[in-house]
Image (cartoon, rainbow, N blue to C red; front, side, top):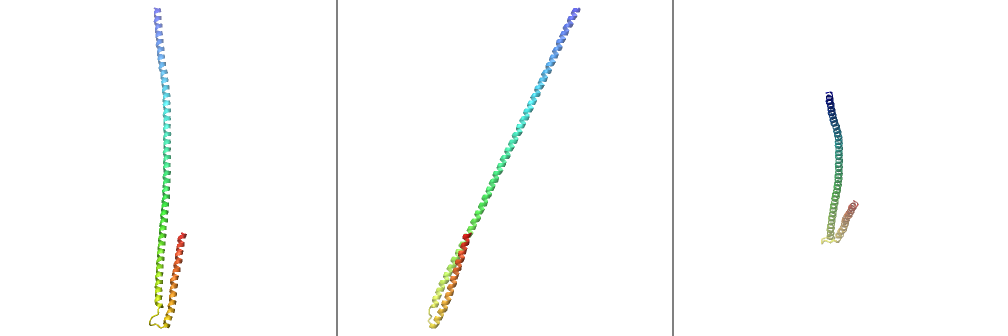
Length: 191
């Protein structure tokens, strides 16, 4: 019996030993696998976190680049608009200057025409006065049927003197008109 008990005890001990070893191995294997899984999970999480950070950084850089590009395009557009506005203002000033010069030229032309008309009118008036004076002088120089020779010669002398004075006045007007026309013409040429 002693032998049998010893065998049972030995077998039981071997079974316990096997069971304990199996449980220890199973426990160790689970812990080992669990720590490896945890380590892999940590590595994966770290890798994912690193990937997420890199992706966020790329997105930030992309947004920053896009923002800079938008600002650059906006700045270029503002500069183009500013240049266009300056060009429009220059063109407007040039157009206004041309219009002023045109109005000034038209005004000068009107003044010149008016002066020319005045000069022609005064010249016609002088010619008319001269013609009337010559007709009057001819009439006055003829002898009237009721005059004596002495009266007629006296009247002729007075008439010659009056006639010369009148012609001098008409000639003086012509000289003054010529001087004025030349001075106005000179002023226009100087402008």
